[in-house]
Length: 587
Image 1 (cartoon, rainbow, N blue to C red):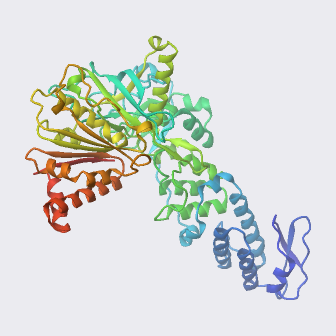
Image 2 (cartoon, one colour):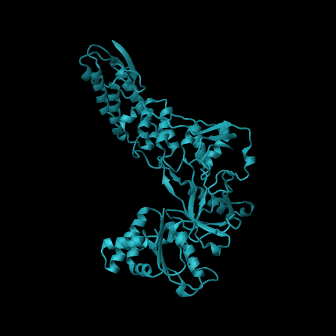
Image 3 (cartoon, helix red, strand yellow):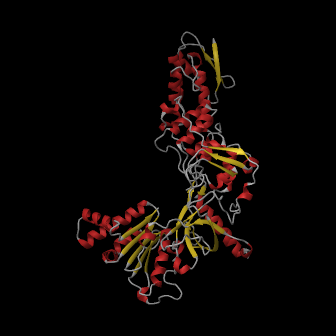
C-alpha cells in the first residue's frame, strides 16, 4: 500500500492528506517519517492539492509562493533534476524539496541576503536552459620566481605596489609616492572620518611638457584587503599554499589585468593571491548575472540551483544591498566553482581618483589630498569600508601611530599613484582672474583650498572669493578650519582674503548648502553676472548638485525677474562650453 516515504522536520497533519485523498488509511508520523499511501483514490491532482495546502501553511511568506510554484512544476511530471515524475512519488519529492528549502532558509548567510523569493522569475527558475559563461582565464603551475622578475611588486602594508603589468598610463608605471605627512581633518565624534595626506612627487617621471594642474586629480591604485582575499579563497576551497604558489596566468584576450594595456591574449607569471589583490574587483561591485549562472551550473542542491537561476535573470536587485560574491558563496554552500572560473567573471580593479587639495605650483614637488572613509553596512549588519578609503585609512593610522611612538624615521611609507590626463572640469576651467564663489560639502571642499592658495599668491589679487562650505557640525567636521587665508609670505591685505560661510545641517541654523545659496543670492547673482565671474561646485551625490541648481534657478528668477523656464535655460547656458560660468564636479 505504501510506495514511498520522506523525512520532514515540520510534519504534516494526517487530515491534510485525508482532505485530498479521501477516506484512506494514512500512517501517523513515526520518527518524522511520512508514509505516502497509494491506492485507487490517490492521484496527481490530489497530491498537488496536498502540496499547495502545505505551502500555504508556511511561516515564510516568500517561501509560500516559491513552494507553490514547486508543486506546480512537479505536477507537470518533472522533478527538479529534470527526470520524469509519477503521481506516486510526487508528494515524497515535494517534501524532500521543502526540507532542502527550509535548510537553506535557516542558513544565516542566506537570511542576511534578504532574497525576495516571491519576486523571482519562476519561468527562469525552473528552466532547463542555463548558458554558463565562458572561462577566459586559466592558471598553470610555474617554477618561475615571479617576484625576482618584478622588483616593483610589494606586499608590504606600508609600501604596497602592484605588479608592473598593471599600467594605467603606459609607458609609465604606477609611482610609489613617499608619504610626508598625514593628519586628521575631523574631530572625535564626527559621523565621517576625513584625513589629509601629503605626498612627495618631486621624482615623479612627468612627461615632457606636462605638469600638475590646480584643481586636477590623480589616481590611486588600491589593493584588496588580505582578510577578504583569504575569505574568498577559503570559500572556493583554495588552500593557502596554492594561493601563493607561482602560476602562469593565461588570458584569452582583452586588456585585463593591465587596466589600459593592449587588447590581446596574455601569459603572465604571477600568483593567484596577487591577481586577487591587485587585478580583480570582488568587493565594490554587486555579483553579476553571469556569476549567478556559474553558481547555478555548479550547484549540487536542486533548490539552490533554481534560486540561482532565478537571480541570474532578474532585471532588478531583489536582495540586500552591498552584497559581495563572498556573501553569495556563503549563502549557497553547495556551489563551489573553480577559482579561474570566478576570476574570469570579475571586473578589473580600477584606480580611484582624488582631487589635489593644494596649489601644485606653491607646493614645489608636494601634492596634498583629502579623503573621507566610506562606510556601509554589509548584509550581516557589520560595518565595512570602501576598498580604497579603507586602504588609505589603514595606511594613515599606521603613519600616525609610527609618528606618535617615535618609529617613523625607521619606516618607509609610499602610496601607489599616477598622474592621469588632468582633464577633469576644474583642471580645465580654473581661471585666476575675476570673482568666484566656491560651493562644496564634505570633502568636496578640498580642491577649493588650492584655488584660494593660488588667488592669494596672485600679485594682482583680482576679484573676491566667497566660500560656502557645508558640514554637519562645525565643531566636529569643518575641514581645513582656519587654513583658508594663512599662506606664509603672501597677501595680508583684507581685500584679498576669502570670505567664508560655514553651513551646518545638524547644529546652529540647521540648514543645507542650498538654503545658504538662496539666503546669499545677491552674492551668487553678482559673481555669475561679472564678466570674469565663476561659480564652482563640488560634492558627493547627484542629489546635492540638483538641489544647488534649483537654488541658483530661484536666485536667477528673483534677481532677473524672469520665469522659471527662462531661468532653467540660463543655467544651461552658464554650464555650456562656450560660456562655462558654472563649473561642477560631482561623484
